[in-house]
Amino acid sequence: MITKSTKRSIAATATLATLETFLKALPEAYPNDRTTPGLSVAFLENGKFYASVCRYEGYGGRDKTVLTKSLGDTLQEALNGLAGSWIQKTEHIDRLKAMVRRAA
Image (cartoon, rainbow, N blue to C red; front, top):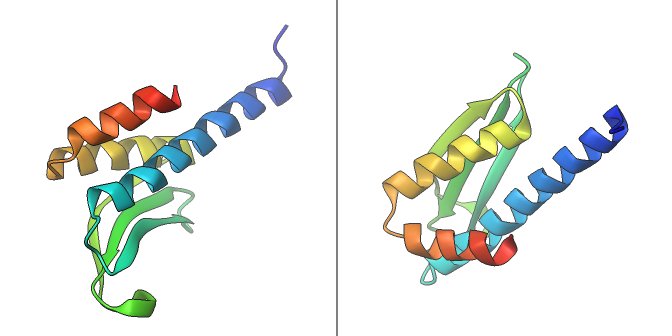
């Protein structure tokens, strides 16, 4: 029998794997950026999770550009939505797919 604790542990592992894959894909997708692109995640007052892909023109987090963003009822849902929208907006779909296959 799978307990609630086990289900939460499985969900947490999947979310961490998604985060790790995404964080590794971003610098590969934008190798010429002076500051490494990244993810921004937050839990909002309305009970939703927010996730976005951000790039920076200047050093130290200056001149932030949000490339795409997503909301979800869970962090995994927000990250899945973010991955889907980022893939649609970039030419890096093959690279991200390869990284996801390697992580699996």
